[in-house]
Length: 254
Image 1 (cartoon, rainbow, N blue to C red):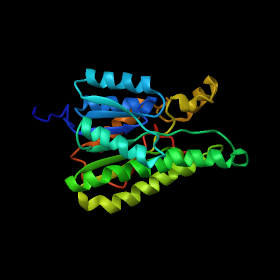
Image 2: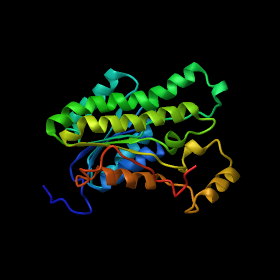
Image 3: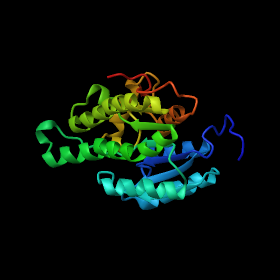
Image 4: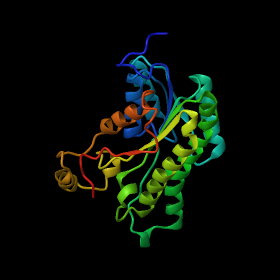
C-alpha cells in the first residue's frame, strides 16, 4: 500500500456518490478520485454520463464503477450498496448528491410533484444512509455528506417543495449526526448557493448575470466549488466536525 499523502488523503477509501451522472455529482466523484478514493458513481437513467465519469476517475489513478438504482426504492438501494461493496470494498464515504427541482408556485404544485420531489431529495437520502450505516458502525468509521441547498436554509419562492425537501435534509443530517457520533461517523451537509448547472436552466442569460452581480464574489458557483467542500468534509482528520451545514455560496445570503 502506498503511503497516504497530503495530495491523496483518501487513498483507497471507497466512496459512493449518488447522482453522479449530474454536473455536481460528477465533479464530486472526480475530486474524490483525485484525493485517492475509489469511487462508485450512481445513476438512475443517464448511464452514459456515469460511465464517462467513471472512466475519468480511473484516469486519475482511481478504481471506479458506475451503478444504477432508483433511490426511492429500498431494495434497489440495498442492491446498489451490495454491488459497490463487492466491486470496490466496504463504503467509507457516502455523498448524497442526487436530486431534482421543479419551479412552481404552491398553488400550482400538484400532489404528485410534491411527492416526487420529497421522494428523490429526502427519502433517497434516508434510504442510502440507512443502507451504509451497518457497515460503517461495525468498522467504527464513516463520512456521510448530504448535498442540501441554500434554499433549504432560507426557502425560495416558486420552489417550496424543493426547499422543504432540502430543509428536511439539513434537519435529518443534524439528527443522524447525533445518533452515530460515538461510532466514529460524521454526518454533514453542504448547502450550495447559486451554482451554474442545468438547475439554473429556467433562467435567461440576463437573469443569471443579474444573479451573479448580487453575489459578493461576483460570479455564480461552479460544481468544483461544491466538490472541494465535500472533499474537506470527507477527510479522516475532520473527526470533530459533524452535524454541520457548510454553505459555499460566494457570500450571498438571501
